[in-house]
Structure formats: C-alpha cells, structure tokens
Length: 76
Ligand SMILES: [Zn+2]
Image 1: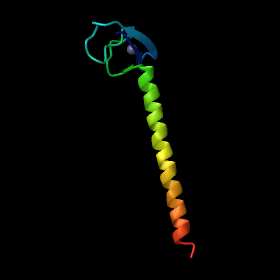
Image 2 (image 1 turned 90 degrees about the vertical axis):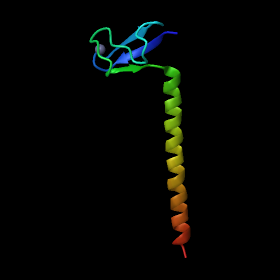
Image 3 (image 1 turned 180 degrees about the horizontal axis):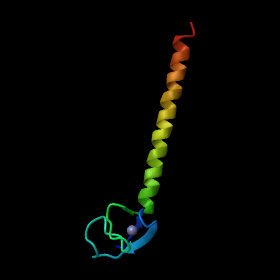
Image 4 (image 1 turned 60 degrees about the horizontal axis):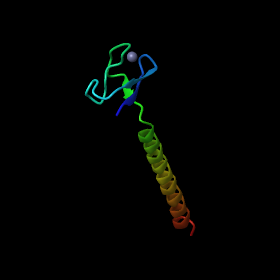
C-alpha cells in the first residue's frame, strides 16, 4: 500500500511506495526532513472533519441547552 504525503516545508506532495522508509513519516525527497511531512490520507481527513463537526454541533447543543436553562431559571 502506497501513501500520499505532504511536506509543509517544500509545500509539495509526494508518494511513498510500500517498503520505502518503514516509519509512518518518511523523509521528504526534496529537503529530507521528517518533521514537516504529514500523511495525506483523505479518508482519515474526512473522518477528522466529521469528528470536528460533531464536536462543533455538540458545543452548539450545550450552549443552546445552557441558554434555554438560563432563561427558564431566570424567567420567574
Ligand atoms: Zn520537503
């Protein structure tokens, strides 16, 4: 299984074939850095976005519930 990676230093994407590198963060072929290299897994990216949206919706729900509770308790 090959993986797509993105180097934040070079702002360039590259593909690492199976067997190369070994670690989950291979060095960038241009600058050789590993710290600036990120995996570009689109399915993981979509999962992350969904999880972030879930957190945002949960926060909105909590804020809304808090406001309703506040108005309810201070309404008398
Ligand atoms: Zn690089």
